Image (cartoon, rainbow, N blue to C red; front, side, top):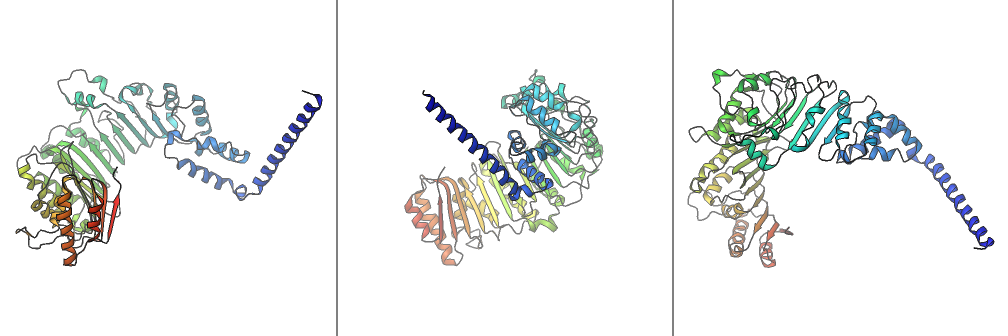
Length: 529
């Protein structure tokens, strides 16, 4: 390369450096004059906190770190704000970054999420060593990864307000836990040491899943929210232990006990009623209806509950009125006489896997009542299920239901049975139907051949139907001849359907759609998945 050419290149490089330096200087001056540069430190911090909290996955958030690389002023505000750093990163991150975050948080109460499936043992140890500063602690992971947890837990947690430990467990291991003849189940259990978190005077919310504890533990004291799910059979409490624990929580507002009740029922003389006047939400799921009946018999609340969810898997008490008895108790707990007409949505589903029928009523304000009971195995006795659903609407005084979702993927209720239920919903305006229940639902809309009904038509206020998750193969003739005729008949009666939506319908051809367009003003076809 000649000397002249080298000099020319050097001059160009100098010019580039000059212009880059000048451009950077201009950007700095411009940023100083931008409106955002005039914001006070308090406003900037509020923006930073909003940006951090908007991150859906707390463990993947690096927003605080990114903020420190924008400009000197932002870096200063961010580093000095301890509250911005209360969520230390633990998800596949460098240990140094976790250490820096903990340092920058100073003594601010920490909000910690530890996923043992994605965090290193060193990270877990480092974060849990700061237990005296943690206000909220969420721990989760597969069973085999949480073995080390007991050795990392401190008994001193003066700032802890909320604790969640959720252990994932393989389905085959669950079967071993339920098998009383299976000898080696200790390796499947996670038991909190008796001294774990014993010095946690501020603890108010406790959630444990597949985690056992001593029901005499100080953890079960002064809580406002308690959720226990899948307690090991050998660790289930007695009724006396459960009632004693609940008495230590007079301010309890939320209670969830899924597979956590004592295994056998108890007689009332052996139990004393418990007053939980602040309780607003109850969720209980158990095996035998007798367990649920025992639990409900000694709980005294100040109705109405905001949410109530009750479920059991088999009836083990004599007679056929177990479901009705539970529903009547639910009506008392939710003060149905006063609040029944506030519920406008009803979801009914029957799932093949767990052989249960689930009925769920919701109000616009977010209140809900859910009861899931075992389905009748005998197809000749389906009236029992229908009458249980009818009792749900009748006893709970659900007089203003305007939306119904009906999805029974393995139960084919006949028209007469289904009509008994639909007659309880005179104000229904919108329905979502699918699978086997959809065809008989349409038949119910025009029961001209049913001598048992007084009115040929039901659901006279019905305006919209969404038909979903159905295969029309081998049903084309019925859909074309029967369903379209029913809608045409209702149109002539002066109670026409205004909108019909087909969602995820297999073998729906264009000719069928055109037929429905002749009797329904608005027909929408959503593509099959």
